[in-house]
Amino acid sequence: MSLRRQNPLVFQPFRVYDDAMSASQPTFLREINLPVSPGEAFAWHERPGAFERLRPPWEKVTVVSSRGGIRDGARVEVRMGVAGPVGVNAVYRHENYRRGELFCDVQERGPFAEWRHEHRFLPGDNGSESCLLVDAIEYRLPPGGGVVAHCVRQRLERAFDYRHAITLGDLERSARAGPVQPREVLVSGATGLIGSALVHRLTTRGHSVRTLGRGKANDVVWDPARQTIDAAALEGVEVVIHLAGEPVARRWTPSQKERIMESRRRGTRFLVESLGKLPNPPAVFICASGINYYGHRLSSAADESAPSGDGFLSEVCREWETAATMAGDFGARVCLVRTGIVLSPAGGALGLMVKPFRAGLGGPVGSGTQVMSWIGLEDLLDIYLLALEDDSMEGPVNAVAPGAVSNREFGKTLGRVLHRPAVLPLPESAVHLAMGDMGREMLLADLPVRPRLLEKRGFPFRHSGLEECLRFTLGRTVASPAKTA
Image (tube, rainbow, N blue to C red; front, side, top):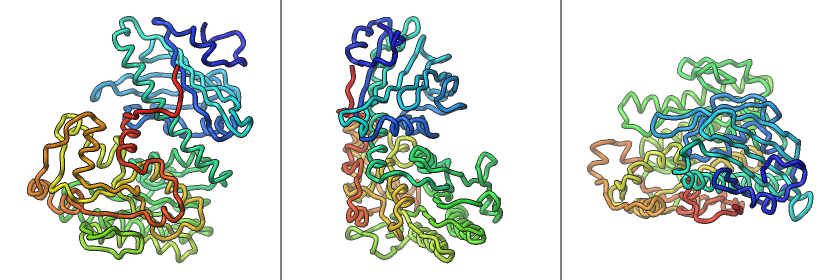
C-alpha cells in the first residue's frame, strides 16, 4: 500500500504502512508525542528557521534557496555534502498543505530515485493538549543503490533521533514558558556558530530577527572599525543580542590581540552609543562574554560572584562587559552571558577536535588534569532565550553545564563516543611552542565554573552530562524517545 492512499484523512501509521515496506519501495516511519496541541506543533514547523533547527549538526547540508514556506508549491534547494568539497544539490517541492494537520515534501531533483515525506499532526493521548507527530517517508534508491540501503536507513534513524529530540525540547520549553510575546530582536555575529543557530531558535519560538553585520546581506549594516552604522535600520528594535567579536582561537600576535580587544571594547561601546541615540532605545541588551572572565587558573569553582582574574582574555571580558553595561544608561536591562566551551561538531572547540579523535589521534592536553567547563549548544540557546523573555534575568550568568570534567576525562569520553582510543598526549611544551599565550589561556586553562544562577532557578538542562551531550550532538545516541517501524 502506498502513502498516496485514496483517503488521506484516515491515518493509521503502523497498520497501514507496515505492508508498504519492501526492498524496492522502503518506508521509514517515526512518531513522537509532544506536549502541545497539533496546531501549536504545526505552527512551530511553519515558522522561519524550522528546517535549519531540524538539520543535524554533523550533516553537511546548506540551504541554497527557499521560497514559499511549507505551503503548496513552495520549494527549497539544499546542497548536501558527500565527501570533502564534493556535494549534490537537491530540490524539494511542498504539497498537501493542511494547516494544523499535514504537509508534505517531495523530491523533484536529488540523490533518491523517489522521495516523499509526510508530516502528520494528530491529537495525542491528552486530546487537544497534546500532539502525535508522525513522520512517514517513502523513498526509492537509484539503480544500484541497494549496496548503501543499510547506510541510508541508519542515517535516517540518526537524523530523526536528533530531529524529534529538538522538536520535543523546544516545544516542552515553550509549554513551560507560556505563550510567546513576539519581540523585534537584533542579533550581531549572526553568521557564527552560536549566532546562526540562535537566529533559528528565536524565529521558531515566534520572535522576529534582524541581523547586524558588515555585509549587505544583513538587515542592519555596520562597520565597527570605522564607526559607521545604518541607524535608521535600528528603529523598532526591542532586544539586542550582541555576539560579534574577532575570533580568539588562533595564535595571538600583538596586532591580533589588539583586534580581539578593540572588536569587543570599541565595537560594543559604539553599538550601545548608537542605540542610545534612538527615540525608543531597546529595553534589553544581552551581551556574550566568557568564563575566561575569571582568569585561566582557578583553585576552586567560580560562580557569578567571583572576581575577575588575570590574563589577556580576562581583560577582554572585563572591557566587553563594561561597554555592554553602558546600555543601562538608557534604561535597558543588561544580561551578560559568560559562556564555557560550546559543544557542537559544526564549529568551535569540538569541531576542531572531532577529526583527530576520529583518526585515533586524540588524547589529553598537557597534564590532562585541568578542568573544562562546557555547555551544549542547545542549552546555550535556551539560556539566551531565557535572558530575552524573563525580565528578572540581569547581570552575569554562567552559561556552563553542571558537569565540568577534567581534560583527560573529556578526551576519554569523546573517544568512547567515537569508538576510538584517546591516549596520545599533547605535551604542554608543544602547546606553548605552537600556540603561545593562546594555548596557555585556552587549551591549558583550568576553569571549574559553576552555573549557580541557573541552578537556583531550576534551569532544565537538556544535557547535564558530558557523554549524553556528545552522543546527542554527534548523532551517536543509544536510545530514542520516538518509535521506528
